[in-house]
Picture 1 (cartoon, rainbow, N blue to C red):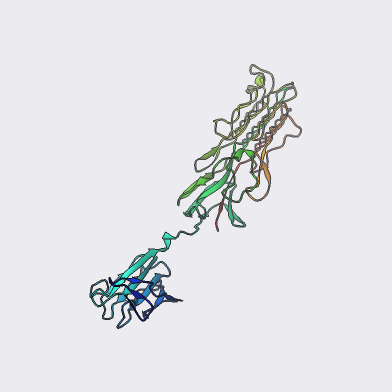
Picture 2: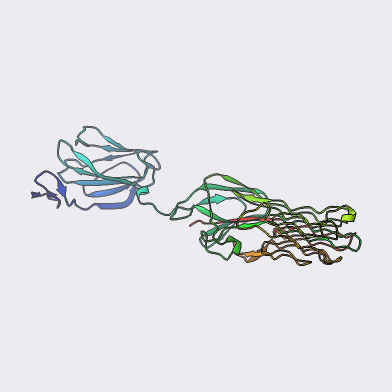
Length: 397
């Protein structure tokens, strides 16, 4: 056993232990240079290939190291000019062409010359990576991006992160509310059902306050692609007793679809069905008839957790059933409650049912998913449902 001048111990079997430490030059090299034993170099080949001349007349145990500074070795290579010494036992120059490569070489003897003792990639020590996306109206709250769609569009993911950063998105998908109905003579029109409401729990993007309907619902994984966004319009309120109210339209993102709210009921003697239609939430029931003014079923088609509730039944000649809401079923003239969310960083209640027979009959606000109000005036217009909304939220840094 002996000691080499640089502090490395040479074993009797020819091996080395305790290789001398490497002094790293933290100024990236951007052009050709000659390396010095004992040093490490960050090499930036962004602008072009670089030739590194290895030390002349090296001694056994000399060490040198290189690292791909800009992850561009695969595009613009580094040539290691041997400068008279072998590299791995070969009298040829070497090429570094792997993106992100770090490599350490030790000079052994005249036969083998410079031998690689360590190499690795930055990917072997993963760091946080985050989703990068565009589309809709984008806002930033702390470390989170919020994409709000009040109309159709595309949520385009250009880069997907990892578990240390972000690779899933929270969402809220609200469908358009159903339209309310007018009554017949001396009757009662039903309120429109709320648009279906579906959301995740919010734990993936900041633990914001969200609806109980999101409890335990996982965020959605995304991949690098475009996701078409559909935002449902509100259903039209019946303009008079002989015309029909309309259901709300569906909203969707990825695998999540929320169903439009059911339309409110009218008066059978005027040719209208007197029971509320099914939907995300059901429409309210109307005047007397063979179906006794029943409200429409909610959560249609069924999903878990439920996206809405049934509409209320008509209970008196001048009292129409209220439309179902995301938070509760409609009652006689009582609208089903909505449900809150602060996914946009503002606490807003969505998907309320339309009240049966108020005066005047109010429409659902835009992008609320609320049902339109019914009306007990045969020649008066009932309220239209509110349009839906889609919101996507994720961590971006």
